[in-house]
Length: 224
Image (cartoon, rainbow, N blue to C red; front, side, top):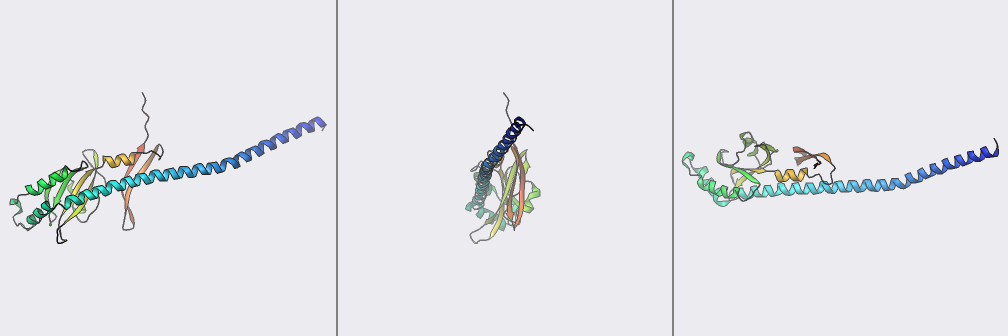
């Protein structure tokens, strides 16, 4: 091997060495940046999810509050107690109860139906959209929120609420039907969550997760 060949070989290996070192330096430099970007992305995702969770909790809390207010209306509750004591219920004038609940129905744009049951769990008044009878027995047993149900091609939630009198006695039950377009809008808002995904809506009951429903969201591109 002459001196020129040796010189070319040294230049070649030097170039390879410099290139390799440059790659290693770049990797070492990029890795902390990648980790920082990954942590920032995770933080943004957690923040977006936390915002959705708080919004859903606020919606459900407001719905529970509205249901509680409807069940606590004094005038309608007293009329219900009179109804419960009446032996001939078919002759009882329920228009007072219906009128008070009709007023409650129009107080919130999210409330689309109210069904009031007496102490015997029999239907007394039904206003607005009727709640499926298959849910009656399950919901009037205790205060709870139903799974999303479809009525007239739209999703709704039913919240049940015991009607308690001044003596802390239960005298009936209200089932209040809520439309959940506002809740769906919150869930399907995928800002900060990526282009597509799934959102599970649920709650924790007796140390077990109870799912209300699964919602899909997808970003669509509008072409002019």
